[in-house]
Image (cartoon, rainbow, N blue to C red; front, side, top):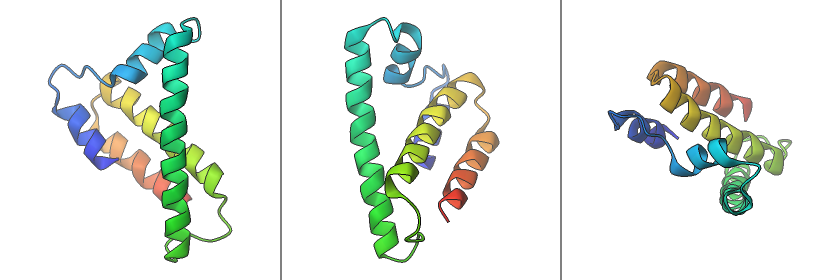
Length: 106
């Protein structure tokens, strides 16, 4: 997530993420954008869930944590970071959000 923050803030025009921008502008009316957004979100959610399961296996995250719920938190955090980076460009706010999200995972 830090890499995405840095990439977003490195753009002097802060154009943001094309998918997030498109979703915010056209959804829910644009079904094509909605399908692309959902497919991308599903792919990210699966990757996050796998990462959480691996972290549980490695003892870095409590086994009591629901991997699907944690993946949803991480996905929502990621999407919020992309919007906030574009809107404010405040790196400290973004880093604090990442810190809190990761601490919530235990």
